[in-house]
Length: 250
Image 1 (cartoon, rainbow, N blue to C red):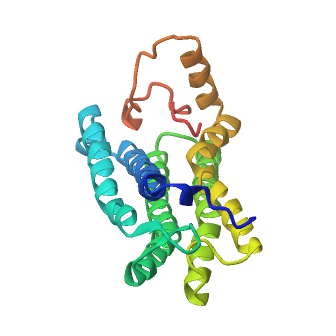
Image 2: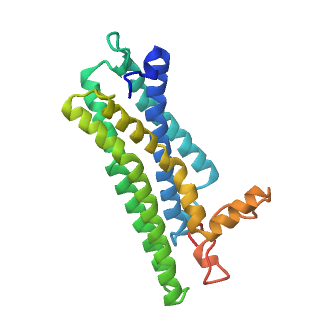
Image 3: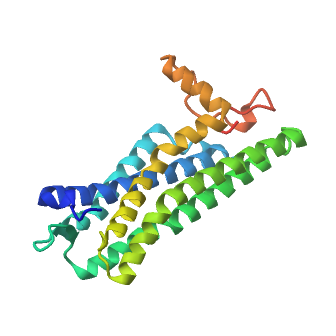
């Protein structure tokens, strides 16, 4: 806000934070996408689909996501440097500067909305189909309402967290203000939007904690250092109690 850029105090700090900033955001969103896919698979009626996401597969996917996100983020460290005239951590390549702003907009706005909405709708459809013959109409309606509410909360939280920063970067790109802005107001808005970027990484935990009794019980069990007997969602066709499902949205 006062024209002082902490990241511009050192080239190593500038490049490392540029790399971690984009890589960390992509990894966090990717893990959220994988969780949405896993939730969809666990609600499928097909046994093969439910058993596809094993612990080994999950670890492999997360490791692959880290590698790919890190590879994509390397250019951010290469093409950002401390400028000699203003001592700011800025893009030194004009072409990549425009590409980076577009990547922020694409990764931050349409991808979370599309992917979370698509797999959320598929999950809701699976729950609706599976519950047609297993639960009463009232119980099914209540459960579907909970699922829709959780999907909307998750998608809205991600969009609210990422959208302001993406739009601000697009505004800077259109007006030619650079990635850090040129006025104190620009830098203040940049600071606020960057803080919001970290909201979705932790906010969903508190959202689930507030709206899901089952999730609260499992958190209490973990805090008491008690081991859960089952670490996966039991298939709907294997439930002994037709009116209760051990998921975090129950």
